[in-house]
Image (cartoon, rainbow, N blue to C red; front, side):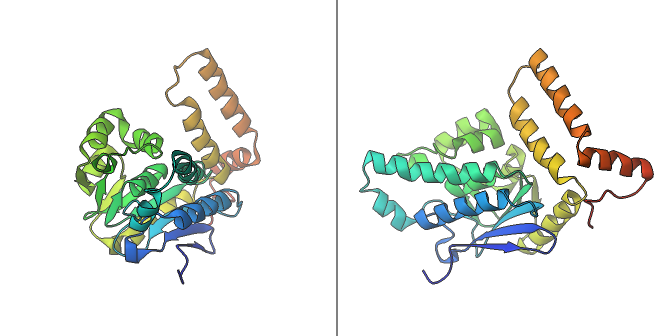
Length: 264
């Protein structure tokens, strides 16, 4: 392939945009794209200058799932080959999910199978009104195994019990109702506006506090509110108040000025 399957761009204000760049096949996943995305997500996650990560796609579709030629090759894989192949996909999604910065998916066209998993692994997702979604694996005698932790987290068990089993195509309105999309815009031309509004809001917030907030969610999610949780959350806020960010943020509020991370 003459062009890169995914492109990384850094803006001067610290926004990393990763764009799936296989529009001729609706940005479908193959081995190269999955591995490249996994490396990119890991890289931006460790860069201090990155304030937010945008996941976008070139062309008519966000990601149509598995590439046909990749599926043809996988048809001849052994069980061990398939396991190793799936581990690479799992690493890619985990690297995205674990990025300690806000992540934003911009969705147009189809987001099927693994493409839907990519959306679910982001913190925030914005889709155009015409976007379509599908967990189509059971039509092929397969199951959405590797993406399931992120999809279940995003839309809940009850919705998964329907859409994992029916493989129905659903629209952006339904994706919004389910919680997969946070906002729906009229068309692709409005995606950038919605993105910029979110980034403007994110840039007002302390980078370390946002990273710790993401970790807090993972820590308390689905845990009983017992003494251990009470003590752990108390320790976390006490530690954050003692950080340079915490001190700067409170002092800036008292001084009625913008904190030093507020660059817009």
